[in-house]
Length: 624
Image 1: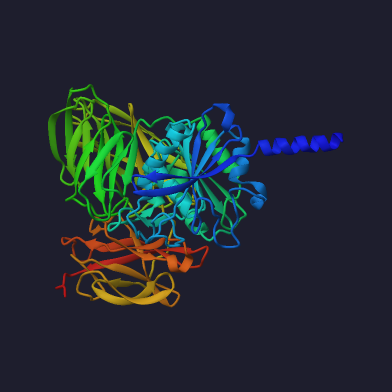
Image 2 (image 1 turned 120 degrees about the vertical axis):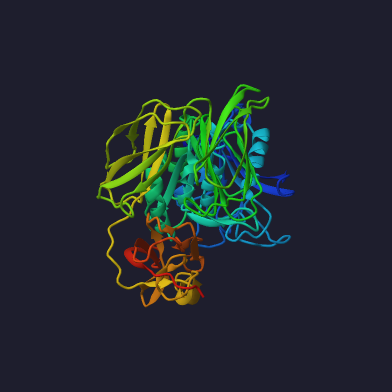
């Protein structure tokens, strides 16, 4: 009898500890339709009176808010015995947190049964799920007892939902303090319908100032190649990024470990960054109380960099980081409430293309905001009557940087302020391991307003596992970031093709062969001044277009193409290739020295090879 009573009491206690799981709907003004969500509430939610942090969960392909995936091998991570019971429901049962699982259902016509969520890759409807996220947050905060601030709000997701988790956290760092991603693709076509872009997480790394991130990978996952490439960049550029690998295929192993990551982030949230950067695929957006409006109606990214009360850098590009600028785009940029209302501020705008400086007094509005009207070219903007230092550019003495080799860079500083600077000590710092910087400190002489000053820096990186090194020049209260891509040693290629206005049969979609016309020129297979060309590298009985890297002043590398591999490896990513433009003034006989990167299919572990390509510039010939 005593044992029976004890068992009953234990069963009641276990039942009482279960999370409250409810499937609900609300009307979305953004979408103009009723949307679904599932909410996991702590077991004591009904009578505790407490408020809880919230994690917004984004499901994967063929799932719904309340339905697991339609493939038998996949597992239910909401509740039940799958994953050994390591589920969302089990975690919420024993932790004070709310999980909201939104519905990514995106039918192309009424009541369509369509497994691809979120309107990404391809963008097929007018629904823009990132634009819906703030509305859902407001609704949940208004109807449930959440801790309604960014410090207690997070995103998480699986696969396509993992991509969404990182995308939304990067778009709204002022709304989200941590983001996790279970095995999501690193790239999808995303953004406004009609001018969507290839959104690549590795190129959007600057969006996560103030956000903790976690990427869960699987040793048997079909996306593992892209995760390794992404981590080779994020681990060295995002100081609050972590990753964990499991002996798993594709799913949510270690659910409790990842949700614990968010609980730790809620306990010790990162502060609002003093200086931040942001890139966005939408023509108009807001970040950290700054607002941007533009008339852009073509694929691209608006980029704000090193934003602080002292100024910022802006540009609009076709792709990041070095895509062609969309100069005709008109930008209206409004600051946060940073200045005394109706106060007069000195504003200095430097156009980086030609160094043109414009300086004027601007009056803040009644809320203490300043407004700037700019175009899509690169501009450095300084605010205030004193000097404002910026790192304008750098140039390597070698064509590219290699691991384990001293890399000498000529770093150019710009005084984008309104007054001459005094002597300024710059100290180079890095959180990256195995990096030697020489000299550690440099003293810049006084720099006139609008003027530039060049200094040299030598960096040696002893770790070959990374693809980038990140430094910061600390100058007084300013931190001036500098990122240098790294490449391995490579042999010289003796067998390559120059496609300068001619069709070749090359690999497309990873494994298919197709005739493709590359470049613009006379088609003689040699590099001529004024031409656009591609470099084709033999690979397994065929040719592949290469992505190129060099600092040769004769080449403009701002054009690139893409080969989508989704039909081959079902990831949604692409292989990139360059379409360099040769300067019309490039002298005949000048040897273009380029590093060619070629991605070859071998799922799930694709191969990446590097080749040094040397091509002399021929005497100019008439184009066809």
